[in-house]
Length: 493
Image (cartoon, rainbow, N blue to C red; front, top):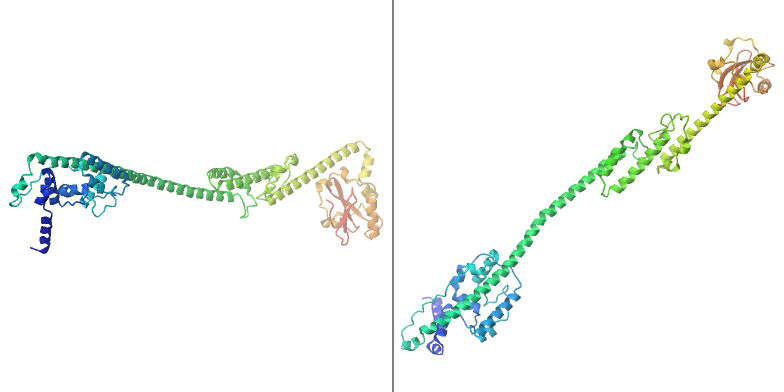
């Protein structure tokens, strides 16, 4: 036999209930003591430790692999303490044992003499599965274990007298009550841990359920941001198409009809950070288009094309006074200048047309007046220069007509009765005197030929007798201009 086996045997023998000790006990106490000794129970063990040691096989058979989570067991410890006190009052547990037992046992941190691993496994399995402990540990009537017959000694008769059938039922009742109490405690523990487990499981489930929702929201937000960015880029592209240059100062007339498409692109940016800036651009663009359209409407053809002023004829009934300053102020300095220049040009054309109309009206009135005069006097006035001055018999082919500063107009020349041909008093005489003083002619040796009527004024060309071109004369104002250097060179029309 090995030394270890011998040591175990000695230990068992040292824990055997002695005869002298049994004499001081009742039969029930002796039976209980004998059972505790065989189970390895010591005086320092708590009630729970004693139960586990005496029912090790039952506890081991209910072992599971799960572990329970930590939980604050202060309320449970208080309940156990209360139950122990009630058992003590009922006489089921000695008072000394209750007093020596710690006030609270921390289930999450067992002591060296605490609950064995087998009980912890059973409780953990109950918490994990949520099944009450009493459903897993069958409640059966305590089986009275057969006490091996002690060796026959001379003291045997004295010992057997304490073991009677009457006293044997007392430890059985105590053990049954103790088992019921322990099962109740285990059920409470299982319920508490089961509730905690379900709570944690629900929390995890809620988090897991909310995680896809959060991810979906992030994905949708990302897609929306990308779409807004693409819409903003499309808007800028359409906006830039309205201008001819990168500085966006000259508008394309051909792009004006695309304004509804730009407004549609602007609407797609509503609610985003791009909207306000894009809205300002559209408003400024609309204001510029309105101004250009209003000014061009005063001309027969567009006077402003692609941001530049071009030649255009003003409409006879154009009224530039109905263009307000608010309409003509677009915020684009270049465009505002072009608008004002076009308006100025239009006003000048209207003034010129008004003067021409007035001159035509005056001419008509003069013609009506001349119609009532003596035909002889009219002929003398109209043909004064050729009848009273200059050479009337000359060869037209010898005249240098190609050097004339005023172009010839045969259709107007044919209208010899037009009052525009009539010299104002003293005009011709003054011109002849100047020509004589400069040495162009001598006496009345010159040729005078009608050329054209411009702005209601008749123009004549003066030649030397040999056909040399001298200058062109305005018979109404007396202004004359030729090709000679050192004198006036500009026309008066």
